[in-house]
Length: 110
Image (cartoon, rainbow, N blue to C red):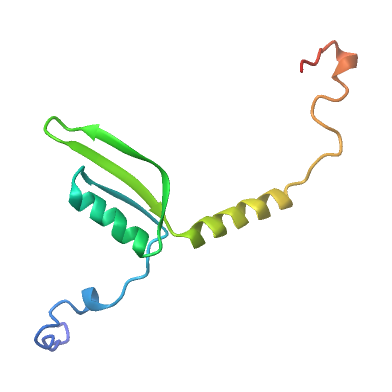
């Protein structure tokens, strides 16, 4: 038998929804091309997000549907840092690709 739980206090029927949630690093906001969509993008920008890429638009047969990706600047910085670290960890051969091919009949092109 499951333990009994007390009902949530009045006005807190969904306590998990009342807690502040961590911001997602990436969001794709979609919707009809109307004022409401623009308000959602504006709210994301005011909340610290920056636009990521160009907006996309399509027609669903009755209205234009748009999409815009937004990201947190910190997510871009950590992604760039991860790429830089990965590149630094690569082992490079001192010989450049293509060196020594002259003896094998290959011609280089500029």
